[in-house]
Length: 41
Image 1: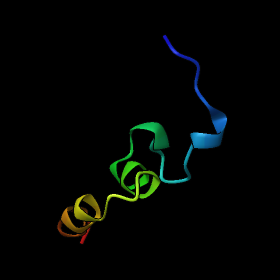
Image 2 (image 1 turned 180 degrees about the horizontal axis):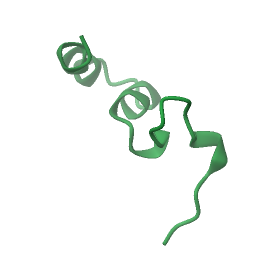
Image 3 (image 1 turned 60 degrees about the vertical axis):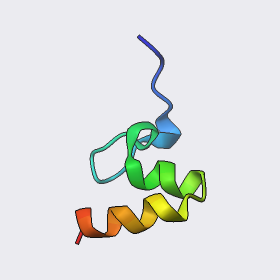
């Protein structure tokens, strides 16, 4: 199992390394961000 990067532990309880919002922001993926809006409304 891989090591957990404590810098990616989020207060929401998710691990940012697998969080769609974090990944979309990290990659500056505007199209993906726009699709996530409806998911998290």
